[in-house]
Image 1: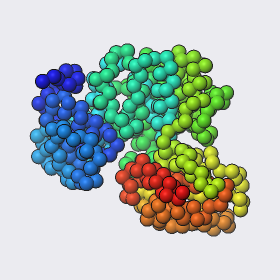
Image 2 (image 1 turned 30 degrees about the vertical axis):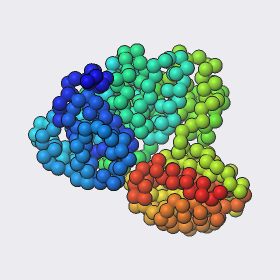
Image 3 (image 1 turned 180 degrees about the vertical axis):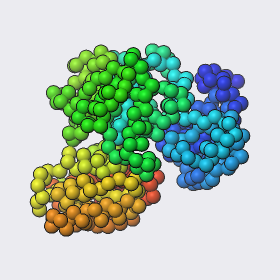
Image 4 (image 1 turned 90 degrees about the vertical axis):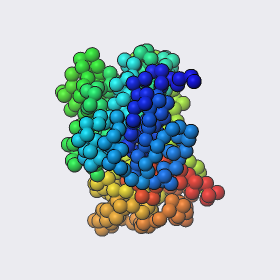
Length: 457
């Protein structure tokens, strides 16, 4: 029998008992299962979600020798494994991880394994509250103009481990890294050769005890860098620019002005800094200005980020499902609103709401009463808090805003939005909250929005 590339390259995992904790829905868990199964390991996958909830992930693993423990975790699996690969979303204080630690079972993450075995010297890591995916993808596209072996992976629903067998020492790896993934690098004392930080704003405060703790997680991207490494910092972000004095790496600043002379199809001022970061990194790697201009001109942006879907009866529909924080929703509203002052001519209808991340809606609420015509709120644990904050601002300003509260399906939300829309209006899905509850993740929410829009025709 011919060995797979994983078996040839990673024989140390053959016949080892590997427990993947958190199969999940974003590709990281399934990627880890595939990697270790192909390496000849005895793989088990455990998740608190049921088989029905994880049916898409399980379907991707059809034909692989995987033992599933779904709907619950079992102590015995954590005691007897040779290695546990934890999903980044699993909290450090998980009692099951403590059981593993008590029995001296090593615990790692897919990112940790990747950094341990990746032969490429040039790893580019991108983190930040906002702009990670756009910046990562744009860097990848720009570098491909000059280099052949460029890999894009990380926190973009694409497993890093499945890329390992195709990477050599001359490859350039572009990784989008979440704060949770960065925590997985501490065990290995690793940082990327080139680190980029986009923005720092409140997020995931349902996971982190404080903003200080969240910022500390983001700073891990450069913690283990040396004087031979590079740190690209957004000088327009007051928190990010202060990191310059806390690193051993060479610091390169970028800002929105660096992108002003370049034409782009991306909407919103916030995208100027994303473009600027990508340009700075591309030039660092010797990509020419003409190539940069050509690629920027053709780059359409990513799904779910101020994505124009359709225009029906003179009404435009925009999918910004990846706006899972108040700040990202604010950026979308500012980018799309035709109104500078409170007026009866506001043309934006906003669909928002969802699961709570313990974030402050005050600034978003102030903008909503100023620039939104109709606010449609989806069911979710954060929706009541958002409605209350908006209502408080309405009383202060005496603005005219119609609020439709706690709609229990995306189809209803879009239908209601269409009923209130007039020619020239825009219907924007920009949740400002997480998607858990009504949806499994933000991408499912975005697809539901697209499907609902199609049903209007």
